[in-house]
Image 1 (cartoon, helix red, strand yellow):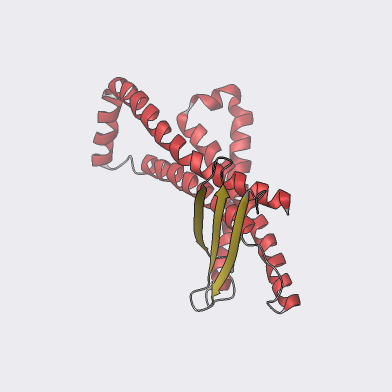
Image 2 (cartoon, rainbow, N blue to C red):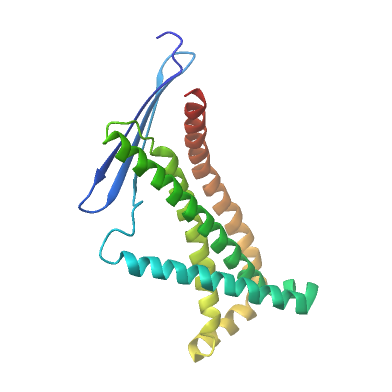
Length: 220
């Protein structure tokens, strides 16, 4: 007990009625100078998506999304070959590149999450629910997938605003933003510094969590 650095308590539960997994991690870290630093994290995730009534519809929508992503990738590649370096002079082209990149990353993480889920279900079936199943890793993958989808939706909404520029009120809004663009640049510099400081404080806790999970997996 004197040489114990940390104690991890991990468990997972599944509610079949709402199709949700609950992943709980509790850590007690012992400091060299004495004292205990507690840490806990509860994550609720949905890993199985096709066994309900709309499973076939969800699968068809996902396949359609992959097809559209490949189509827009091919279209932007042809546009890049046609315009060359001038392609990157437009903000909306950069937005298109970001949307396609995030879409491909989200598809990769989604597929990887499905592979991990199948392995977990296979282990559960072979052991009849008595085997050790670690859900923390798949919960981390699902969290990264959620971050990618959040950034993707943000940029997609900006693109949607471009599509509604034909509306008179939206045209006035764009004209107003164009006229005060110079003042907005200095404002966004201050806003960006404060926002990045806030994100840095949040990410310090997130990276600390991932570091502890990595150390625990390495020790196991």
